[in-house]
Image (cartoon, rainbow over all chains, first blue to last red; front, side, top):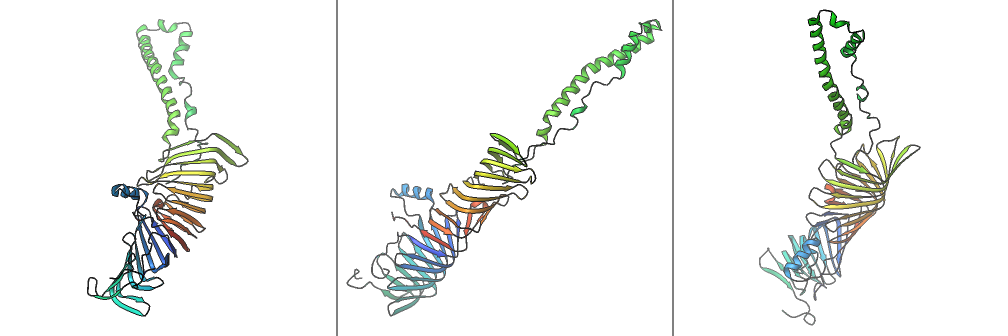
Length: 160
Length: 247
């Protein structure tokens, strides 16, 4: 899960929403209205979710350029409006959440970003959740002093 | 995009085709009577008669040229007439057979090539296209497929079991196994769709499902805009996104 080890962000994401608008030319899929997205054990809820993806030609071109296997179709997901991220161990709330699928990070921002783990609650303006290491960092102001740090449990994750 | 006018032009028998009647009797006829009367005009004052005769022959010579030219012009007009009346949409219709029974004109293997008013080419084929002679603006299509190119050079094909095309409102009501494929890798299916060809919109309030580069989706309604460039799925949507393998 989020807090204790890497989360596989290549798993399919099930999304339930009132509406979905697909903009072919801009490669955008915009979910709106009670959006509820689940990937493995991670859940993301928001008023609106914008998925940026590559269409087939771009995916192939990008792969050839990188000389690697075609990258995933989805590059980035932006959640807006009452954003709530949760996993069995941890939750995060904010106004805007950006899920960098390839970079495996979720950045939450807002007037008040709240991160909780068990009984610990940390508030700030920005939180960065690293899905690969399970580390989450809360900053008072974007780029400001760190207010709190969640470290995966000693016996499971690597110690920092 | 507007579907082409299907109607043949039954009533367009060009006017004036019946008037190319015989050359006017007039002068030529008169001269002949006199000479049959036994050649008396030469005895009556030679010079005056000669003058009348030369004027006559000049007129006859003129008529020998003018009348054939007039006849040719009239024939060309009769042939060119339908083309001159052709509507702005360039349109070619071909079909394998045509039958008319009780009140309908049915074309088998109908195939329309046309260009809509935004200059976009399209081809529509249908196993059969039936135009009811009582409601001239309605054409019932069976097993139709449409290949349409959009302004941005993208294309998509659209097929369905049945289609009712209304020429007056430029609407196409599709039903049964509707499938839409686009060259950007999208595929959508549904049971009913109302296509407004002029506005380039598609509307459905029935189950719709499909896939795109982002994944699979299913909804209870659809609104397509700008010739399918923007598609809104509505009334509750379930989507499976495939982030895909990380390179």
